[in-house]
Image 1: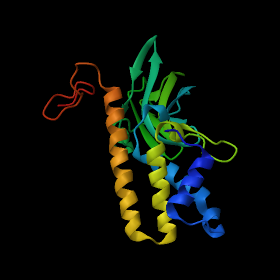
Image 2: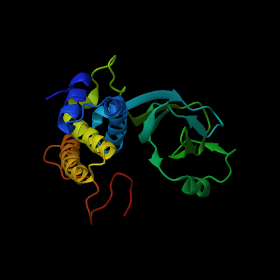
Image 3: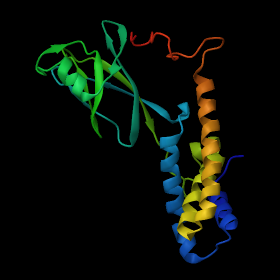
Length: 218
């Protein structure tokens, strides 16, 4: 059942049986930390957003949008063909393309820092690029009473809030209970995400002991 901001606050107060002013003043922080935890722990397609931009010729770097957490994929368009860039760490990219002033059609990308990706080869022209990345939804507040988490993952959101609330209350034995409930709910959500990404009657990609046909690996 979906939640609203006010319902979540009420549920936290009633479940902890703590209606003190000091506790109530901290609830927004409980919710903020719970939402941050969900952004990291779940793998829902509903958190994926896309950015359409353009690489600059002779520039190996591209800035990322504010608030992203994970870059899921990147692809460019070259001569009308979409090319999926392979994700590699910066050490690999430095070995593969050590002379950054040399240019070509990008094949790889990597996370350079918290705000930037690097591509290799350095673009020979201004390729269009599409990024898919995970970004947290707008936080719930009294002004914004619902979001993706309240609609799609209300149990996990509530359990995560209760972990934070009971840590504040120093009820450490109860924290273990809410943590277990949260962990079980997260696994259910991850299973849902895996099922949503699976093709009908098709085996999962990259199974153990099978060839990785997506990246050409052994």
